[in-house]
Image 1 (tube, helix red, strand yellow):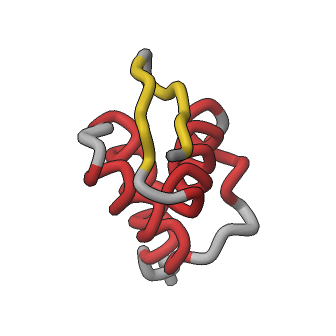
Image 2: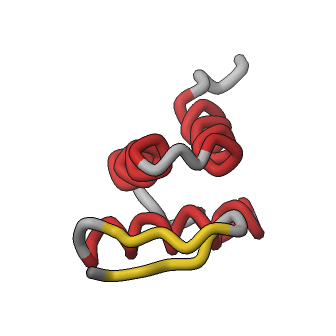
Length: 75
């Protein structure tokens, strides 16, 4: 099992891919601009991984990033 230390907890991830998603969430939580090149679909997967492991703060950060990208442009 792949492990990651995130939000003060050590989480045993079910797969390496889930660990990678949580690692991306951790990075985005530290610097929201780190997700510039990540697609909305991938961001949704990251948010779902946060939800699966009850990482509410990171889940909210990712949700705000998704909403910011999904919002219609003013005009």
